[in-house]
Length: 406
Image (cartoon, rainbow, N blue to C red; front, side, top):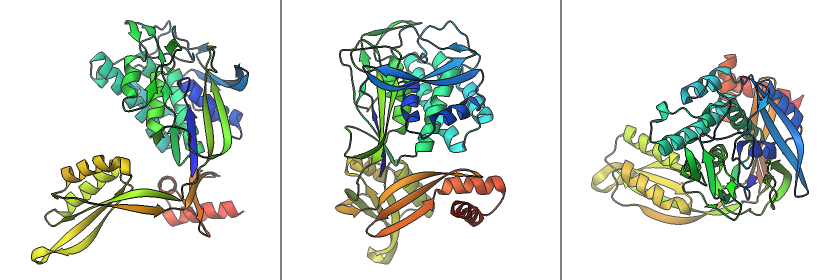
């Protein structure tokens, strides 16, 4: 399984995550050229070599109208969050303005736009909670600055290019002490960062300062499939994204890309019998279960007592998701009892390849194991091309396959 592990022992900011992921690409300079061609208003991005504690990595700087954004109390540099004082003013300061820029002006795939806006909504929700005002009424620097748009867009594009099957993030070092903001002096982590990182393993440590920004926190929260220690993996690429400040510890995010062996795992099968729900209600319940994290949900027609036709619902899930699944089953179905069976699952090794085609980037999932090898293109990528070109789904597959074989 293609696995990305993010070591956040010195926190995370958007520019640091960008730099770490950038080192995993075969041609980082080409990516920077693509970013500068996106047309983010006034933005110019540069990458440069940086050394921290004897380790060589990459620092990414974002200049807006020729000026690199700085914050007063930011341990990483690169950009500031809403609470920090700014000498520069920016016109696009509401979430509505950001959506206009992303949807109307960024030349990126639709799926990347959705990732960018999802990250922004996490930040906006956190700032809304911190300031006690509706999301639609907040105007704050972090969501408004062009450099923040660049940071978030770059990370979302890089994650799309790298296409890991899973993203595991270490416990996040958030720093300690206080941070000076436009509203006064606040504790670290700042309220917005703390809100975003609910249900995420974090720690303070002895380093004073803000190590994790709201942008960094939102990007990690959005893309992480799990939080914890580094898994057993065969590393194929390692990237170091450097912050600006110097500490006794290397001020960087480390990204490790590799393969993890995941041929077997334990899953639970939760099942129940239903004879008094409509097809629409059943479909709605299945959608909610998938959204809640079910690995699979399917139905089987059965005969029940009193000669009633019924439906057997089966949900496959991870053991840690049992309670959440049970709550969803009882909320969205009419059952009064659920059965549980523990199962061993055998799976093929999976990895996702990014294919450059004349019609755009397409992701292909390759699976192998038990003497079997096969590949399949991602449905969403193919369907987007089919709609844009006005041709059939099968025709797109034929065009791409013929292009690969040339």
